[in-house]
Image (tube, rainbow, N blue to C red):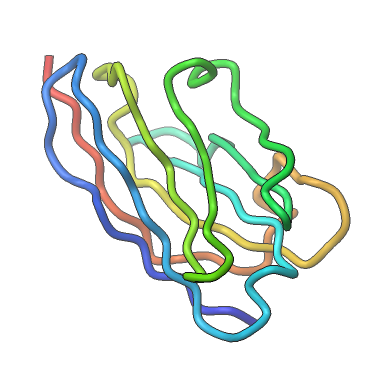
Length: 124
């Protein structure tokens, strides 16, 4: 089990940038695939991005590809989501997730560890 704490959310104008951070507890951070999901008001939670244990591979939803970048620093037990060219439709609560299972899930069921979320609001 790992505890996840997100930070970095806020209000930004369309076209702007934000960087979300997720700090993980414990000494086994490097054994977790990490990711981000988001949930907009009235919508289902959706996959945003994921990164493998050593950071060698990254995966993105089509809606954020080319604008968002996921990265991790295993020495700091932290995963990041750099969000550029933000759009009003990116407005959502963003959740950091972690799993020790093999593969890189894109569904909520694939992650057994979830943070509390951080709110991102993009104004037009």
